[in-house]
Image (tube, rainbow, N blue to C red; front, side):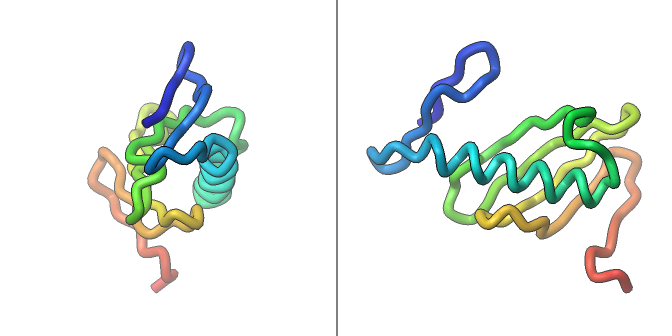
Length: 95
């Protein structure tokens, strides 16, 4: 359960345990990884987090120049996959 106020996370609980600090740290780490991937400052990107603190990872939507990127990230903040609304795909392995 995540409690928000005006879009900001106030507290987060998983299995009855307060994981607010863990969630905030993971969110920051994930936003940094995505910012580096997109070669943009974190402050200029619009992030929208989904499924945060699920056991298998999270989905993050980011708007850049009117293009929506959807990132699938691990619970360690690593980018697993990415897609974008204009249909272009990325190969994260550089091949």
